[in-house]
Length: 72
Image 1: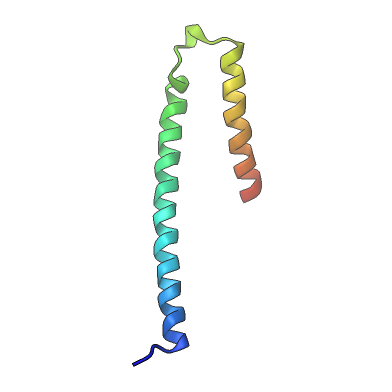
Image 2 (image 1 turned 90 degrees about the horizontal axis):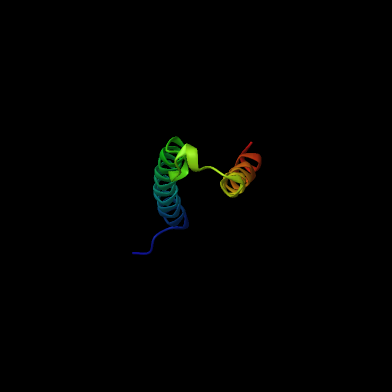
């Protein structure tokens, strides 16, 4: 017996939702890792910070700003 178009659309939507929720989980995991990374001064000891580290932090900020600007 053939599936109807409506059945196929329902299956497709369910698959899309499953993939979407999986991706949201991955995003949340990456955000948690980034938060820990930031909380730990990006792995640098505060006494060792120089302008190169400022540039690296600026690069991270630029990329995160692109994401938030696109989102909001």
